Length: 273
Image (cartoon, rainbow, N blue to C red; front, side, top):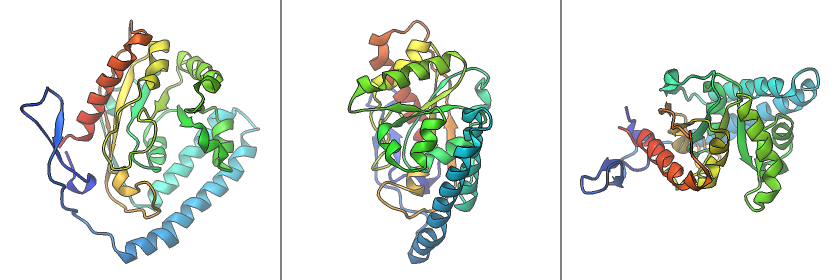
């Protein structure tokens, strides 16, 4: 099912293009308009509440993590923070395909990245503890950076890959001990709501640990909160989970081909009508 107000453009199959490729057609008309009242609600209610949740949960969770397993405790706080955010912004999420995944087995979940609110969606709707690979720049944010570092998330320095060796080793160890990993293989948020080319290097860990990759498409989060704005536009969202893609027997030189397979799978989920 495809919601016409959830994507800036509609895509259709091109009979003359290779199988699995899509071509853009005319932009879809917006089914819902968000005017001044929507902006005021976002700027004076949604945004302040989200910042309040972030400060309170962050300041409480860090000390609380010293009284037990810090990674488990901080994941629970992150889920609670995310649940409050999703309830506050009135954006229910329809989840499809997750029931086909054996969540008792570690996978690498490859997710498209359209919004800062992708994170709360994942924390609420992935029913297990996991780690997230994140950009080093996030460590500079107070509270958020502290939480990421203490909770065992995987820091990636895109400017200096050699500086990420320790984090990569930690992620590999976690995967081998059956801890799932969430990655955003586009390398950053989309600036137009379309799926960007995936970075082959993002799949190094999956190949090294020989775990399957699960493609995940978040539909509607770009329209909910795109880059460079604080205007949140409540809407129905979807989390579409695809079939696992095996890495059995793959080596480092197979990363490009694997990235192409995952890209095709995410695009099929994201652009499905």
